[in-house]
Image 1: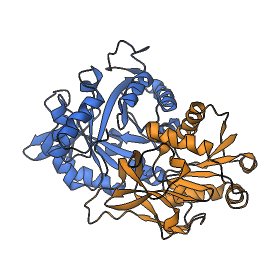
Image 2: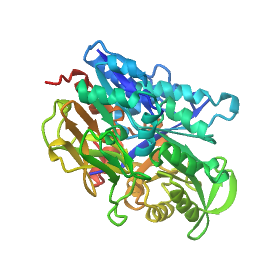
Image 3: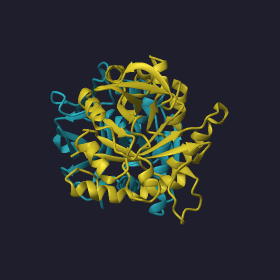
Image 4: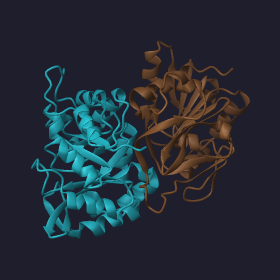
Amino acid sequence: MLKNRIIPCLDVKNGRVVKGINFVDLVDAGDPAEQAKIYDEQGADELCFLDITASNENRDIILDTVKKTAEKCFMPLTVGGGVRTLEDIRSLLLAGADKVSINTAAVNNKNLVKESAEKFGSQCIVVAIDAKKVKENKWEIFTHGGRKSTGIDAMKFVEKMEAMGAGEILLTSMDRDGTKKGYDLDLTKKVSSLVNIPVIASGGVGSLEHLRQGIKIGKANAVLAASIFHFGEFSIQDAKKYLDSKGIPVRI
Amino acid sequence: MSVAVIDYGSGNLKSAAKALEAAANNINKNCKIVVTSDPKTIRQCDKIVLPGQGSFRDCYLGIKKIPGLNESLNEFVLEKKKPIFGICVGMQLFAKTGYESQETQGFGWIDAEVRKINNINKKIKLPHIGWNQIEFKKDSFLFSNIKNKSHMYFIHSYEFMTKKKDCVVATTDYGNSIIASVNKENIFGTQFHPEKSQKNGVLILQNFLNWEIS
């Protein structure tokens, strides 16, 4: 049977990991490819790079990072952050990314998701959504790393993205991101039940139990987390063992 | 030995080439891995890997667009009977017909067609993305040292369907039983991505490099 995926996410800025695993035996702890290798060895199901490089001039550095990682890690890699054009997507795929996640540009350029899904296949187009709760049972889409409100209803937006050919939704709760209080389970469940494409839950993981909740209660197909893995609190194996002990299907 | 990874404008060739290099390295085999679409180079190679990403139609049209590529692949596979490994859509192209976006002819090396996975009234999500277990249907050298029910990485919405059950090497369960690997003489393919399936995937590529057609 298909297993639920556990996806560690690394923030990369100018080719360096911003927050990452703090292991003493790392030759270069700031090297994304080195960190990727550790997650690969731990049996992570996929890997996610979020490029937070601010300036456009340095955008090509991420391609080099992806290339280096793909040379060493024979596992699925999703790359997002600053993806605006078909050419951006093509470059990332050619560098070795398997999936590309589109966030702000999916809102601002209404044809980008459609065109890229037609060109490269739905399977490699992930739409990353930053949603914030605005009132009971209502969430709104935010862009620019969660700073800019759009007034767009999250549920309507995910349905539209599915219709346009998105292959997957990476759903981040802005309310929970960085809080360690767990995923916004209402949001996750609502989106997961609404669309017939896989949903990756993101934002707020502080414990292994949160991962279980994201899958069991939130009905997510995959769970993404950053800090609980980076700081060596838990390894990917710890997470899998925990989920397995709770009856959640994972690849051990 | 030289292995050609066929470049016809489809997706992630780098991963396939790098994983093959790692596989060759693991078994101390002197292999030249070339990423190419040149018919002459292909004819001189000993083995071929045919990757594939995107739609069946785009992939097949991509192959047809390169002068002499289609012919050199047919010659390699049908006349020279040298080993070929199709990955994902690369394997799907072995079929006679694909029905993604519109009806498109494939190589027709195996009597099969490629259709959208049945989502069983939305009970299952598509694409089928992630790690799923494969179940062997018959012995294959390509799965030497791989345990039955091993996990492999899948990412697709369309499936390979054939009545030629003797070609089916492995299946996986996603709502229904889906073909995960096929083999007919020198023709081998996997629906999953060995180049993304960590150690098990590299093992399969090692077996491919060691494969000798009897």
